Length: 399
Ligand SMILES: Cc1cc2nc3c(=O)[nH]c(=O)nc-3n(C[C@H](O)[C@H](O)[C@H](O)COP(=O)(O)OP(=O)(O)OC[C@H]3O[C@@H](n4cnc5c(N)ncnc54)[C@H](O)[C@@H]3O)c2cc1C
Image (cartoon, rainbow, N blue to C red):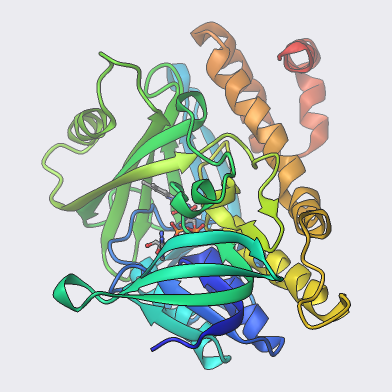
């Protein structure tokens, strides 16, 4: 049985929701964290790589048990054999999300949040008398029951499709031009350099996305996958394309299992808060629009959201706190200043890169290759001044 009333209800125990719930519980609020699935984090629909270590660590290092490998660099196979190596010791980690997601939810629970699985948000009302009402379907099959609860604040961290966001009238649906479909195939053994993330990108491979190989050393498997913009009717689907590339690059690879999903690559939504309501993570399109990575941003957004809600709950007049849409813009601003600006730039860069023809793309890869080879010295660009200036101008003009 749930309580009748909570300070905050967080929907979705993915990385964004669990971090938001944990932070709010630590501030002393009465928090309910609900997850519709029975097993948190399962099935994993993710390449499991992250190069934003700082954002993954809410209150200290990530639990050793959740780390598969340390990432010491990136290797990109580019068009026409122009490859780019980016050695960078300790630049990120390969996670085991089957362990990581439950671990984050458990931390939220240990810090005082009430965690309920097999609990699906089915209805969120408008604000009435300083609260939102919710209906939650708990349990499954014949044992399912509907619980009605109220909360001063509802946070929906319900992932890419965010039915809850749409339920309350936010325009958070996925549009074809700014959504990727991704497939991840777990392959037995380590296909590529074990401590590197390897990519294939450009006209010789997949131009409107990329192919990845992310080895998980402890489990001795590789997440091999691909993602590209949702194909138009008649174009090959992502599963067929990924299988074809796996067979071409690693014939005979032993497949353990295949998962797929959507990735929002539109850059952050323009607006994702309402009175006593906010979206977090994929639901708010916090995903990096160039790489499609969203674990770290969801966690960072979860923290910002919790911080803002806590301040609103404790500084407003009366028990209900100040959680108006206007006030909650503070949360949107925090996200924008921290990663949103960069994501907007990367959104433009992705569209620019994909719009280049093969010859132009090869030229750009050569410029970037020189930069990487120099050890990321800006002076490397002086060796190719005409090329660099040409691309900067083109990028600046690109709409
Ligand atoms: C194929 C693929 C590969 C990817 N690879 C990477 C990668 O390598 N690195 C990276 O950083 N990111 C990657 N991503 C993106 C990453 O998985 C997401 O950005 C990240 O999981 C977002 O976290 P989140 O907490 O916002 O949402 P999610 O992790 O999606 O969590 C949302 C949770 O909400 C629950 N939920 C939904 N609706 C309800 C409801 N009504 N009631 C209760 N619970 C609900 C869901 O069951 C889910 O547990 C990949 C995505 C895909 C599809």
